[in-house]
Image (cartoon, rainbow, N blue to C red; front, side, top):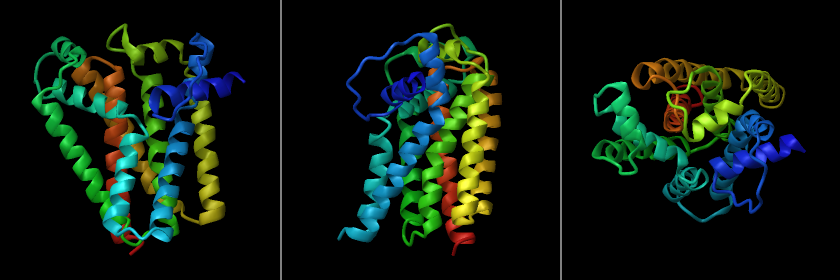
Length: 262
């Protein structure tokens, strides 16, 4: 039951799925919440895939409309929490100031010009990739769409567990203080289970392997740059890492659609 409550805490914090119930916020429950990060990502990915399948197979809407509704769902389902982190991180990074000043900028509730521009570019890229690769979706397309938030939430969890906190406050620090590095064993179990599922039922190991490789590269990129740019990890940087990883994975899926599955 503790794990289930931890999963529901993760859903409450990092999605817009309504769960009108209060849960204990002690260390044990928050630790379980961190362990459930990839499961929330998988749930989100399954919802994306089902939504796209419905619009493609059963609705009278055009391909453009189907792509738009999927794009919109990627924003609505997360409640915009990671986009907020992306904007704050962009404002801080493009200030070209020292680490202390960048952390101060991220705490500012106001959004600057660079934050606005960066989120416009991010969302435009995501819509372009979704529109292009959902033109003639194959079975593997739905599978790989489900993998995108699964991998991005895994990257977020690995960063939380492996990078020191830049400040002793905030949502990221709250989860990091309660987290246990042994949670990585859970992530490994989820990953192995997912890959075995892909191999045995869909025989799509190569494409999934490429997506996994992109996620690994993204992890090491954010792991290095978070320390260099901000002195460590914050909740905003974690949110930015999710958005950055996902746009990289959407781009990868778009490229696979043209050069592998075409």
